[in-house]
Length: 520
Image 1 (tube, helix red, strand yellow):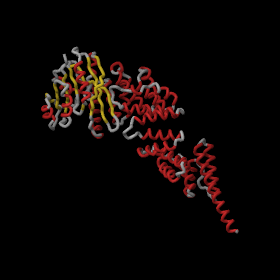
Image 2 (spheres, rainbow, N blue to C red):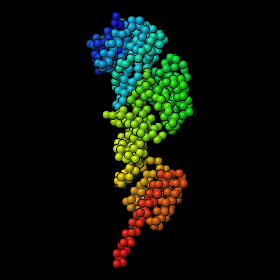
Image 3 (cartoon, helix red, strand yellow):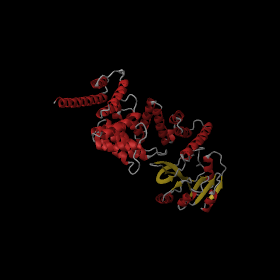
Image 4 (tube, rainbow, N blue to C red):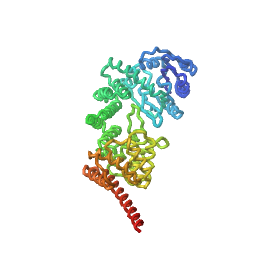
């Protein structure tokens, strides 16, 4: 016998979203229960016209109370709950019909479906308990971020994760999302007063404070979860809390504490790929490339998942290949680095590429002297980047143009790099001195020399009596740089010296020839 399935919804002012949602799912469900929490538009009329049984609930700042009101009216053997902005494609409807035919009469299983949220260039997904038996013991808990899974676990029901996707539109603006976060914060803090040790409340407080940029508060609440026995009840929430805690501690410059958290997680769950990924990333940030690589190569990127916490699998895989490539590059495995960078880039094929990967590929090809490819990637990365990261990219592009003899283009790149480079960065200044010397713009060359002398703590009130004094000055700059272990800067200063000497020799030769002509 096929089990009866009731759809339960709570709505407010959803006249635009409701018709599409109900029409899609009508083929699957045996009844539609809609609880209205105070609509001022035509939501109620729309719901009734589509065959829904409509009930009313006075809003009391409690999402679980509203959802539980909808459950009270359901007559089916099982319940599926949806939001008005949820969408189920035809392919997923077919899967849902098939699942409905398999729902056990014993009512001993609850089902988590895959919730997918679409953003501009990526999607986030997680599993959420959406279908469960219609039993009086099963009720939502929590005034906000309401959960049915807690009572499902308490009752000892089996939980199955099924590959049925529900697309959640999420049409809120950033401003509206911030308002909602502040509302959620108020509700969660009130909830905490009634049960100060409730780990699920602490977890959502951590999430909310993190979204609002209050890192210290987020750390406090994630720690509460991490130090609780949450892992015995919901291992996924425990892991997510630990990873978020570690990442926030890194941001707050508490690296040793962050590493301790990641090592504890890895010890408890040695086969978990998402934990190994973040541990490897930690080692990478610390420039321990051997440890980072050994950790990352043990990760299966297809299995990196937080399961019940939304995340973008595409973005996390991108980060994985990007980090892996970074390790390979720094350890001198250039072929493997190239392959990993290109895998990262392919994840964004057909969309706007990530400027970080383009930049790294540009730097990578520069290192292996493939300047044409390097130029292509650097130029594209610069076109997509609008911050200080451009300084390094402009410098590299400038060096490529010098190598190809395109001095005007090189000059333009190094001049563009100056505003984005730190005051003690001599390379763009010395490169410009070289390019100014190339164009015989001696005054500008002297100005760059003065800037470099300030960095090297050399007296800048020197009097240059003739051209050879300038040559001697850059010779001294080269020597000082070498003594301070600044090899690249020393080479640049020597290039300026060499170019100035060449200019002097050319000039002297021209003067000699003029003198010979006059003598004759």
